[in-house]
Length: 263
Image 1 (cartoon, rainbow, N blue to C red):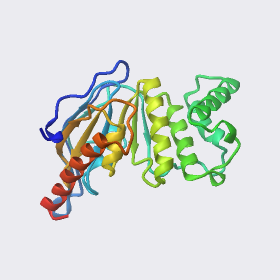
Image 2 (cartoon, rainbow, N blue to C red):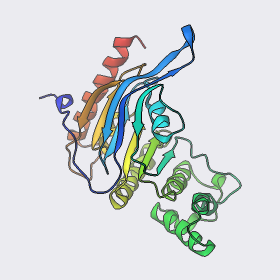
Image 3 (tube, one colour):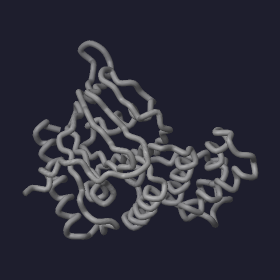
């Protein structure tokens, strides 16, 4: 049986928050100049699931994350994150350049206002230690490598105490070794925190490496072309034969979508 025929739901998890998208559309502009980024897309992410979205450029992946984060509103349909706190992490870490790694992670902790200053510093240090930056708390972004800057951005996202973490190609600009290390760290944090994660990527291997499910989106306007449960044991190796077979079929489906729409 083709791997892409496996469309049953992935494994259930305790904790987390359910994400639900119901017949959502997003249109930009008006009249003859309007562009449909998403059309009638429906998707459910169960509490604690790790779901990866893959699709060609212009398939509406980032637009869908913007809807889930509340940065934009759907033109039609509905988006529901269950009232849970949502954090959004981009491909660019977008750190405050004048602040240290510790200062960047302190920002959302101070905004929450639940901790005193000493406790806030302890929490920021704990999060930086969690992402492997215990010795780099006093470094500013320009003194850190690309992978380290993304670690700071991940720690800052975790500092928001989010139940839902939205990640828009966060490791796309990193080298393969750094990306693989961050995959391991992210997976461990996901398991420990029991977060619901929606992760956008162009990379089929990355999607299979991380996801309970991989959702393949059509080219513009974005729809769900396939929803594949990744029933491989964890931890997964990027170069394993089983992972490579899933990635190969997903890649073929993506290429077919692009060819069918003339992109």
